[in-house]
Amino acid sequence: MQIPVIGFAAYSGTGKTTLLEKVISELTSRGIRVGTVKHDGHGFEIDHPGKDSYRHAHAGAVTVVVASPDNTAEISRHAESLEECLARIRNVDVILVEGFKHEDIPQIGLCRRAAGLCFTAPVERFIAVVTDDEGPYPVPHFTFEEADRLAEWIAGTVHAAPVCAETVPKNGTDGAEETTIMPETDFTHFDDEGNARMVNVGGKAVTHRTAVAAGRVLVNRQTFDLIRSGGVKKGDVLTVAQIAGIMAAKRTPDLIPMCHPVPVSGIDLRLHLDEQRLSVEIEAAVQCDARTGVEMEALTAVSGAALTVYDMCKAVQRDMVISDIRLVRKTGGIHGDYMREE
Image 1 (cartoon, one colour):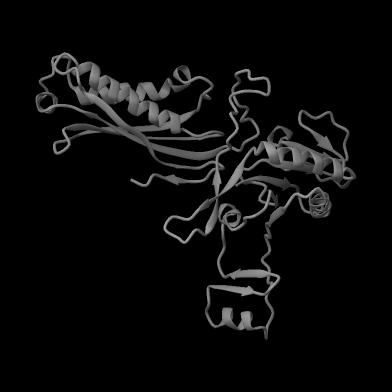
Image 2: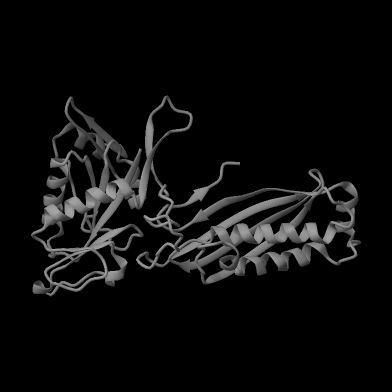
């Protein structure tokens, strides 16, 4: 099950809670199950002295769960990120987030100019806006009195699932489910008419992103020894392949259709020989500060280095195998961090 996530971003006093209340009611009346996450920058208490749960917590319990025939509540004595909060929500059709205006999620921006409260970011940052100003605006816009229209529009995005949290089985459990942020499943490189397009990431926040990819070239004993001894006639295989991989990473948008040019701030590409496997092991780490990630740059770096190893050694061995090119880990962006399970 995929759960779209949409934020409501506004300064205090703009009226986002009142609007959100109306939108939730409208969505619920349409049969859409809503989950919400609210950011409270001032701290809060939902437990009360004298209650058993309060006594548990103040005795030292880090997490207290209160269950009744009708409701379940969990009280945790530690801060959690938005991603962790979203992971707790399941069995809903959409998650609406109030606050967290600096998070990299699709957001609806609110502006009440009559009260001197403007948008929290440039309008292009938002997927829609709610305002008392007529505009014009480059995104769908609604007034504060149009909660029903806004709800109808959100209901349409539920089916498009622009950014999702997906409920998946926990590994090694008895079938319990957990919610984790997952990428959209739409073929977003195509528009509604099937035409190819480059996805517009202009509304996403610039964040620090990293990616590490790896791969290997399997060779025979003769080729392995020649690479190690520097006996390959074309030159130093590992050094040339390292340079080639870095150059390939910088040319990724020229090689991969619809891939955004990214201001890469660092590429660390390393190659080493694995005698037990008889392979050239390749790992590339790439980082940037951008609106989209550098997974493709890391994978392209590894691929370029591997192809160069093959090219430099093909006169000695034709049946080398380039294998296991893979993303090892990545950080940053709305989909959160990823670590491959080897």
